Length: 206
Image (tube, rainbow, N blue to C red; front, side, top):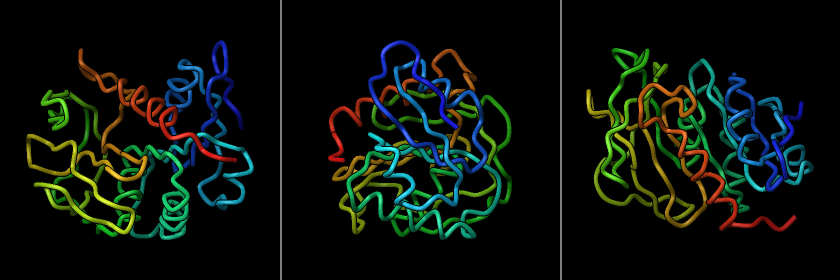
């Protein structure tokens, strides 16, 4: 289904639905983005047929290691330099596409008021979480993947779990929490703006 942009349409995004919350397309639509919500088992051809400026990988339940089909799609999108933004489950999928493994947390992160440090701004955000799995990636410094370099951008202050990453040589980033949940005064809605900026700086040739 399609969520129309509010006001003038600036960009088109395909949202891969792994269990998407209605607030997410709404947050994008409010920023002038037309959102095509597509089933998680869509092919790359299905996705590109919508002529997106970027792809959003949604949150959802489950074990990311069972979603190799989606991981493979994300790899193909990374190769084509499609701007990508993943949250929660989508963050774990992006991490696996980059070659990192995921593991089950002994104590899952549930509920609001989870402090997360955004290393790029040095700000602590109070975020809403609902995840039982996490990514294994180098916490310090720059890591190397087949798609270029990247870095961990967000870390949980409670237990050092990775809560966000970005690629430095390709237009892709992700966070492990819900930007639209608005848990605190400095909520993470700016991440949608970051995604829009990423798409504007990395136009896709259709």
